[in-house]
Length: 461
Image 1 (tube, rainbow, N blue to C red):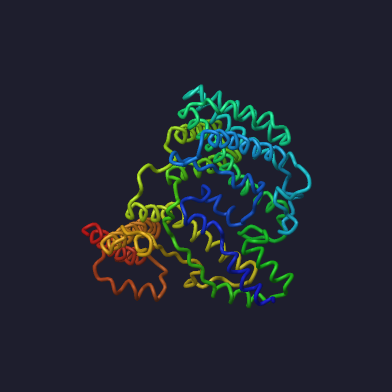
Image 2 (tube, rainbow, N blue to C red):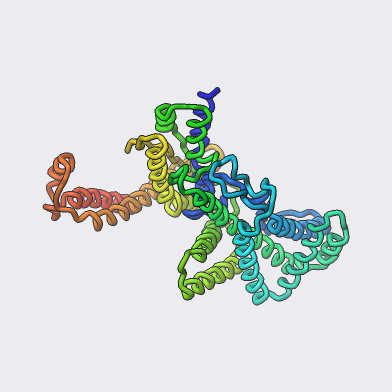
C-alpha cells in the first residue's frame, strides 16, 4: 500500500497550474497565481471558486420566462458569492503543517485580519467596475445595482420568495440591450472576484510559510498536495527512505497535451487582462510602494476593467486551425516558457533540502505535446497541408524564443578565463567566430547563427 501511495503521490503532485495553463479557458494565471494553483488549495467556498458566467449571445434560453429566471438567478448567484465572502472563515492559526491549515471554507472561525485583504480587494474592484458601468451606461448601472440588492436579500433569506419575484418582475420588461449589459456586468463582477481570489490564495500560502520560519524551510509551499508536502508525508508518516522518493521522482513522466477545445469561448486577450489584475493586486501590496506607483497601479486597474467592459467577451468568428495553433503557442510563450523552468529550479532546491540530492540536468518530469493542427479525428479542416503549416509556425516560434534567450545569455556571459576542459574543446570546434577569448560567447554565437538560419527557413515556407 505504501508503494502504491508513493507512486500516486508523486505523480499527482505535479503542479496543477501546468494543466490549467495549458488550456486558455483556465482561471487567469500569473507567476504568483501559478504557484498558488500548484497548491490546489480552495481557500474560498467551492461555489464561489467556480462561479463564472459564460455569456454567449447565441445561447437559447427558451421562452421569455426562462430568460427572466436566468437573469434573476445570475443576480442571486453573485449575491450569494458576496455573502459567502463576507462570511469567509480564516485559514486557521497559520500553522505550517499541511493538515493543520484548513481551506477557508472548512475553518471554524472567522478571522477578520486574514480575510480583510480579500474583502478590500473585492470591494475596490467592484467599485471600479461600478464607476465604469455608471459612466458608460447609467441605465444598466441602475438595473445592475437593483438586481444586486435584491439578490443579496434573497441570498440572506432564501426562504423568502419576495426578492426573487421582484427580480422576475423587473427583468420581465427589460430590453434585450439592457439585459445584455446587466448580464455582462455580473459576468465581469464574478471574474473580478476570481481574480482577487487568485491573489488571495498566494497571500495566504506565503503568510502560513512565514508563520514559522524555523521549520519546514523550502522553496515550495508546505501543504499536503504539493510535492513538498508529499515528500514530508512520505518521509515522516510512511517512513519511506529519501533515496526511494528521489528515484521514483526522477523516473516520473507527466506529458501535458495542448488541445483546442470546441467549447472554448473565452478570449485569450480577456484572460490575460484578468491575469494582469491579479498581478496589479500583488503590486499594490508591495512594502514601501511609492504613492505615485500606487496611484499608477490603481489607474491601470481602472483602465483594464474599462477595457474589459468595452470588449466583446466571446469570439464572433470561428477560429481557423492555424489560429488555434497560434493560441497554443501563446500559452507556451506567455506562461509555460518561464513557469516550467522556474518550478523545476524550485523542485531541484526542494530535493536538495528535503532529500539531500539535486535533480540531474537531464531529468524532464514535465513534457508537452499538442494535438492542435494534427488531429485527424474531429476536424475536417485539419488537412495535411494545414498540419505542415502549423508545424512550420511552431518551429518558427520555438526558434525565436530560443534565440531571445540566447541573446540574453550572450550579453551576460562576457567571460574570458577559467573555462572547463569540455567548453575549451567545444569552442575549438567552432572555426568562424569573432569571440576568440570569450569562449562562452563563441559557442552561444554559433548557436545563434544556426537559429537565425532556422528562422529564415521557416519564414520562407
